Length: 112
Image (cartoon, rainbow, N blue to C red; front, side, top):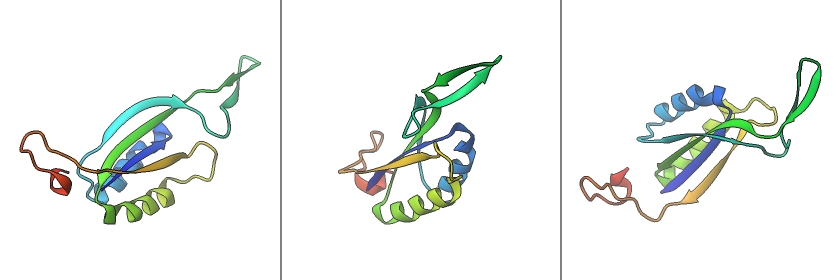
């Protein structure tokens, strides 16, 4: 199993949810977060004054999928979420040793 931690712009959340639904992903967690990457924030103008905004709003979506589904899902996300601009986001991939459904005690992929 693989855990995907997907960090995207807030306006791309509905697109990402549609992709996950198409790939029959069973569950996900969504967290509002703030951060920056290579661009170290942006410069904005307000009433003629420039100021740096170095913490930008982001959305972090976490899900666990079967190993054979992960690569295809990653490719689809990159293809459809990509705008070609800084701040599009990142996907972090982790190995998941086990999963346990508390209600039934099921383990492994059947717990997803």
